[in-house]
Image (cartoon, rainbow, N blue to C red; front, side, top):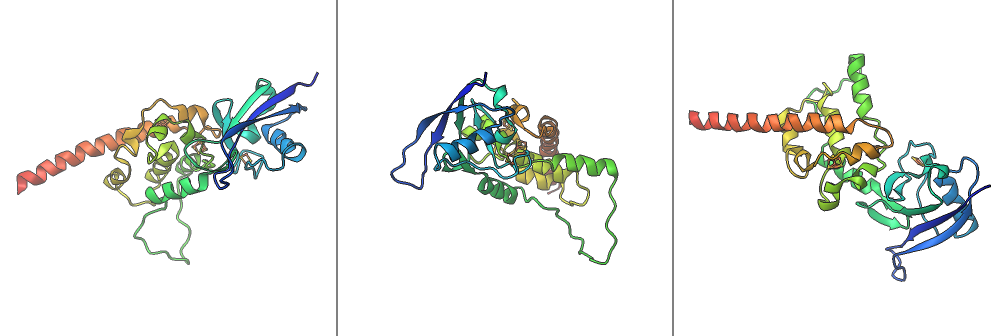
Length: 252
Ligand code: SF4
Ligand code: SF4
Ligand code: FES
């Protein structure tokens, strides 16, 4: 027999002075292969047209549908109701500006993060449109692609204890972005340049390494490996820079 699902959904519109944060309750009959995307769409069509949430691809690609599902950040379009108990609580992802109800502005956070980590290939080579495309070793291209699979859903940021305490923390998504450029041979930045960007408590040294980010990432990006590599590399760079400064001091 089909279950009757009982939803508690966060409601608040910060742009509406009459709105106050609350949980609204809805009942919905469960259907075969129902996802939270289907459930929310039905709730909006059948019960409350003002319910706000974000979706685009419905296939785990756009990253728009991140929300806290029974206490755990995840993608609503990828979550089947049959895998949840019949009481379902949905909250917006913390750590991002709230648009309304379950909709948050992850774009603003990611844009700021990309600016901070200077998320582009840094090179002094002049671009020659007539030149043949530079070749790259297949294995290395795949390694870079692996780290490019982030869909910017924000789930890792919401799950991260450091991000909760330190709003300017780059988060696993930001550190993963740096790791991606570090292995790209076209990027001419040195370890010291990267250290200037992330060798601090808002970057790699703020990470507590408890790996909620990796547990939660819906794309299964190897965040644990990247955070470990980055931490070791930045610690090594810090020690090297200390010795370099001491050497300079002796020569004066
Ligand atoms: S391992 Fe680091 S980035 Fe990942 S959740 Fe923990 S503190 Fe955040
Ligand atoms: S690293 Fe994973 S959890 Fe974090 S934003 Fe990218 S896809 Fe989402
Ligand atoms: S709607 Fe695109 S990831 Fe869920």
